[in-house]
View 1 (cartoon, rainbow, N blue to C red):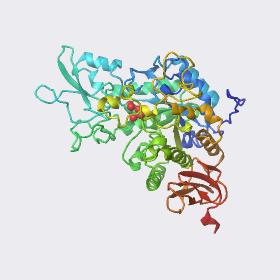
View 2 (view 1 turned 30 degrees about the horizontal axis):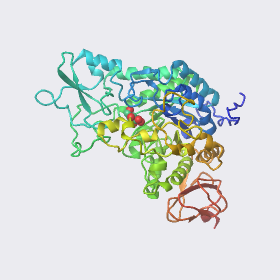
View 3 (view 1 turned 180 degrees about the horizontal axis):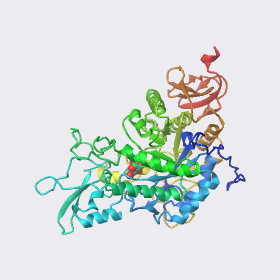
View 4 (view 1 turned 90 degrees about the vertical axis):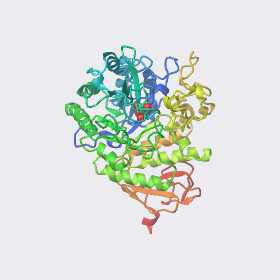
Length: 563
Ligand code: GLC
């Protein structure tokens, strides 16, 4: 195969050759996947919303960065109440993003560039405009169509109270009441997110059968795997009893109700989905990936989701929620490596995604100026850990969270449902800055009639991909070099991790034979664990000293080993 040349003349290094033998190490075990939030990636038709053609156009950016593949957030037919996580047709592309022909071209492009393609699948709920839900509304209580969802009569004299006291993730009660065909208030239906996202009843066999068809539809089109939304959801306690949590009414966003999440039956579904993936692998030797968004309280519980016959990976969210704190990082890394390794899988690290405040702002604490250095240090730490990693678009450009969007521009249903800005997600979903010095920074074509769906701040001028590519000291080049080293150095990716004794404020470990990673979480310079210049550092770093809020990689014996 000829070496592809990218648009700006940069020659691509093809991925490490990986054998199709079942005995070979599976590609996903230490893959780095780049998350594309399609809506905010690149808009080719000037409507202010990203599209699949835009993903194709900028795929070379992902390839040049050195990622192994892309995960696309949902682009299916949707009324967009939760930006695509409310799906009305799981097997069609929403016209705002393109069509199936464009999707097929994207599959081809990914193949040509050696990138894996991972799609989002959303099995816990659908859109209230999904044909099944419309039929359920039309056909009334007791109908087989209602049995595909959780419909129940209300409590109180006239059924005016919800069937139980559960709260929704995005605020308010987890139940909404419908108006029946005769115009009177009728049954209630369960939605763990917004009322526009009714939960499927996974105890109904139609639901499992439908999703098997959905998986096969996309596998047959050539995708390499799926990111599973809310993978600890799907099944609810069969009797839908009240939560006994005394704080249940106080909590506006209930993500911990043990009656609504993490039910044992869900593992049977993941075993079935894994078997479907294995069926495809048996045909062509190529492994398909299932990566779950399984938000469960502990790494030990998460380990259950990645047992050898279940999901290949589950996002390890404990770093996504970690403060800039050495003890916290140390503990969650230790727990993850121990618990997940015991399953035979690898840890799937993630620092940013489309639901969380970006690390540049999250790690800044009281001092916004400290954010960029800490975020870069955390990235270098993550990329040195054993296992796989996910990078969220814009992370490689050092984008901050946009925290000052006016109320009137906020689109996140969390804001609408809770009336609070806490946890809203628009700020990490601002359209990417590609080039130029003013909005839309190459996100939409020059002179587009419609502005980007969320406004880009003036500060994005310093973060454009164009500018970062030409600056050897940029965050982009840090990520790019780190990913290149991950491909080249056998110590990185899968393998062992051994903690080092360190001075206060420093976290350090050795990977395999002699790759040392150290991070200075403190506010003062610390002695470096290895003599000589680092191989790579997240900020200026000379010999022998590790500056504050800096991470570095070295090859060589540690100071302790030299003695
Ligand atoms: C997941 C997605 C989030 C979405 C929610 C409901 O948590 O990451 O963006 O709003 O599920 O589908």
